[in-house]
Structures are given as C-alpha cells and as structure tokens.
Image (tube, rainbow over all chains, first blue to last red):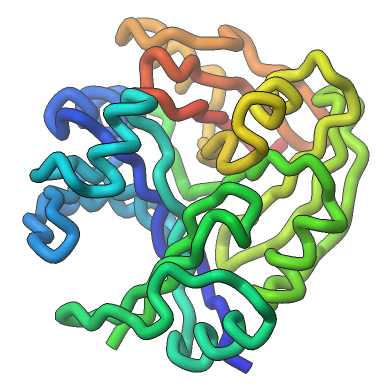
Length: 134
Length: 134
C-alpha cells in the first residue's frame, strides 16, 4: 500500500504576501526560500521551509479560486494540509476503494510533482492534499 | 534570538475520535501512537506521528473550550499550527517587543513541555502555538 512519508506543507491563505511575511518571516524568524508564480493554481506562493516541512503562504491571483473564496469568507488562515506520499496513484485508488471522496481522482501533473486533493467531506473538514515528488 | 526548529504538530479539532480515526489512520494509513487525556486543555488527544511532525486529533471534553466552540461553529477542521522552538521565553519576549499579540505572555508549563499561543489577530487568522520540549 502507498505510504505517507511526511507533512510536505501547511498552506496558509493570505490576502497580501508582503504583509504576511512581516509575521512569518520577520516576527517568527522563519526563512523565506522563494516566491513562485503558480499559474495552474492561480496563485503566488511563498515557500518557507520549516524543519522537514514547509509553510506555504498562498495569495490568489484570481477571484474564482478556492483560496480566493476562503479569504473572502474568513479573511485568511490555514487552508490545506499536504502530505507527501510515495505513490499517489496507488494512494488515490486505495482511498477511492475505501469510499473516500476525492476532488481529483487522477493527479494533476506539474513540473517536479503530482498532486491531488481529498474532499473535506471525507476528512472531517480538512482540505487534504497529496503530493508526490517526481 | 530564539529559533523555530520544526512544525511540532498540526492540530485538528474533531467531534469524535473514533470516527476521525477511520480517515486518518484507516484510510490514510497513518499510525496512531497513543490517545492521551489532557485535562489542562480539557481534551482527549490522538497523537499521530508523521515524518518529523505529528497530526494531533483533538476532541474536547468540555463545552467551554476554544476547540469545542470551533467544532460548534464549523463542525471540525484544522485548529492550530504548532511550532517547536528552542527557547520559548525568549521567543515570546521577542514577539511581544515586535508588537505581536500573544494569548499567553508566559508559557504554560506541562510535563515535558512549555507552550503558549499567539493570537490569530497577529498572524492573519492562524492560531499559532509555540512549544518547547523540556
């Protein structure tokens, strides 16, 4: 069976990257690795390594994304929890067989990674992302 | 300056531990380390190691806690993000000097750990916990 190896990242929805960095980088003292435009997710993402995981600050670049709606409703906050897995296709097939509702039944393929989301209806309200490095 | 060394855990508020374990343990395949009664937090906590961090499922044992109110309002979900620090008193003093609003200005001392919460007003909506192993 496919295995989760670690928390890859915790994603935090933010309306303004620079303003957020005054807390996460300047106050907490975490190190900003880089900021990346992720057009497939319609967002700018600040990658902040933390131990063996990352904090990702996600600022939407369009109004029609899940993150943009989350910010409109709540102002911002923890948006999703991403686990790294060793075989995402096998994990998705296994979850589906167990009756878990998936947002993506097949992974989205991006440079260096494959990713899929599990529906919060099946997780107790947590948007769970699965991530396989490729 | 005090330093964050890793994400200690991501806490997930749940109304029912056993029901939650059907997802986190049985479907995702994570390993339940143990369940602990934490009277100081009026909660039962399931500790689920994941890589160098943990997922903690937190079930309130009283109605007057922050987690109980969170569940009453939202049904459950990611509740707080806990960073491990090497010197919690120094970190709290530093955050206070930088104008960050703290829920606990001095750490609560529990067996094996000291802990304090940072107010979500200063973090962009994330309840941040700081944790020092002792």
